[in-house]
Length: 235
Image (cartoon, rainbow, N blue to C red; front, side, top):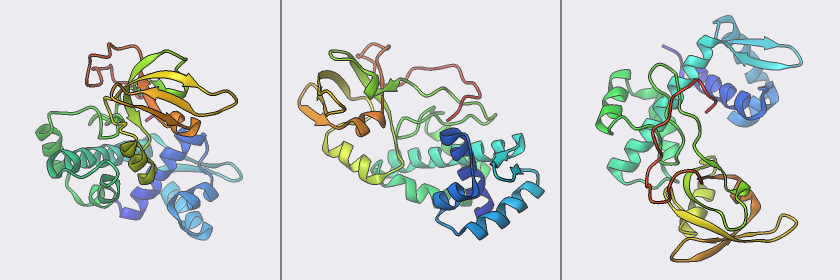
């Protein structure tokens, strides 16, 4: 059984590889809030165990073995988030911190019981795809809201969960998974975007638009992400 620290490192490396295509020791240190010396030692240990390859002056790359560990941890995390949201009523801005702790503690058996209890879901409370037990994952649905043109309509299917403050901001703006929106005004030179939510009109900035994904291909009468073929796509 891997230690909590090793699992956190592997998951952090995986995320950095997806986001930035490189996981340098400095970026790992920044992501985990630890000192560079600690990262160097742990990276050597992870590489020695066969979970990653370390290239001096380039960074760290997970092996297939390491990727499977990362995907398992992400599956656990997102299922726990959904369980906390659905059964205990925790807000989508609250579930991440508790899931970070519980993902290391619960058994594989309990995770699969949660998966079945929740109806074998494909998406977490923020709309992110939940990896399957075999490591496959559905593609991210939709496109960034920032790509919608003036007059285009869509439905919110995923939001970034990196910052609880951002999620609280969306709640204040009455934006949630399933919200139907229409772009009715777009200021030039990177200015704010005005959205029609049906019951209200709001103005949000371009940074927020880039952190919201919208499905503009499905009928706006749908209320859930559609079934999609799973692949080993980035998550």
